[in-house]
Amino acid sequence: MAATRDPEQLIRDLIAGSDGSSHALRDAACTSQDPAVLVAAALITPSRTELLARAAAAATCSRDRQLVAVATAHLCGDHDRTLLLARDHQAAHPDSLLVAHIAALSTRR
Image (cartoon, rainbow, N blue to C red; front, side):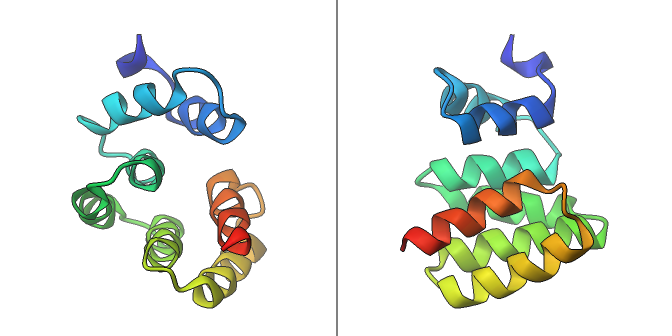
């Protein structure tokens, strides 16, 4: 059941391209207050503005605020800024798979 799935696993499944991962992530984002889930859903959803706004509102620590900033720069097409923000974030949080994924997407331009 998607609503009970671990947010980290939802993000890992999305990055891996697992079957049904996009649908499960979109479902989870409907009720989630997890900034990472909301950002990941924004990456795959055309109506991403609302998801990014919810992620920004839910971001209570610098790690989450940085994640939102990286995703926002990427989704606005500012790839140079995305990579700079991602590099800074990864220096402090090397375990952030979602930021590494966003940076990889930005290098594909």
